[in-house]
Amino acid sequence: DVKVTQSSRYLVKRTGEKVFLECVQDMDHENMFWYRQDPGLGLRLIYFSYDVKMKEKGDIPEGYSVSREKKERFSLILESASTNQTSMYLCASSLSQYSNQPQHFGDGTRLSIL
Amino acid sequence: AQSVAQPEDQVNVAEGNPLTVKCTYSVSGNPYLFWYVQYPNRGLQFLLKYITGDNLVKGSYGFEAEFNKSQTSFHLKKPSALVSDSALYFCAVRGRRSKAAGNKLTFGGGTRVLVKP
Image (cartoon, rainbow over all chains, first blue to last red; front, side, top):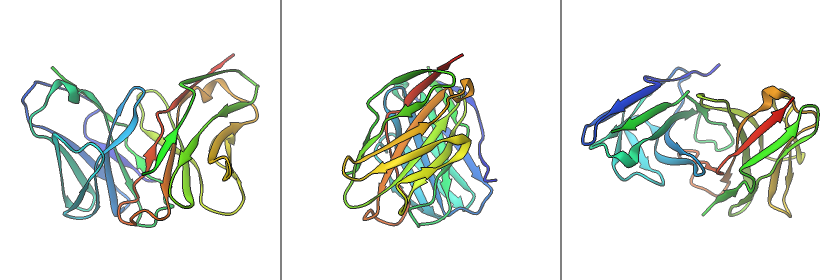
């Protein structure tokens, strides 16, 4: 089974801090994604990566950046955390560029910015 | 642009009764369609997908979904609901004409299912 592991389940940070969320997948997947999940809004794509060192903006990239130095690891960075970034963050991976492959999700990081 | 609508925020059903969760989509060309389920404090789990072929797709845990091209719908169904089916359900779509890199999906807002004993 595919395993996508997010480093923290719960995280509390302060406004203005630089925040790092880490995600690791163990199935040699090419694609990795970061979403945020808010009630009533579903999942919104922040950034994704289809190869090492490659990244593309999703629908809501403002205030975020990403890093993918190794194939198995995809990091989300909040450059200067703000209270409106309090949310559930979900990482996902998928096998290849073939678009009929499902994405596999981690258990999420619930981030609170005070 | 592609989009997904899940018109019901919540669906209540008695255990043993049929369960239907509605989904309609908008996309250029033919779609790839997916259903996911999310249990409390967990990530999304893949249930089933429509790629091509038979309009009735069978997936995990006894769920199935029917693709209807004319109505642009992909409703999730289960003939006999269980209390353990109580969860949040998401429909997602991707257009086949979309850029291949990245396999981006567009998700609906989610429907909470509550199955009562």
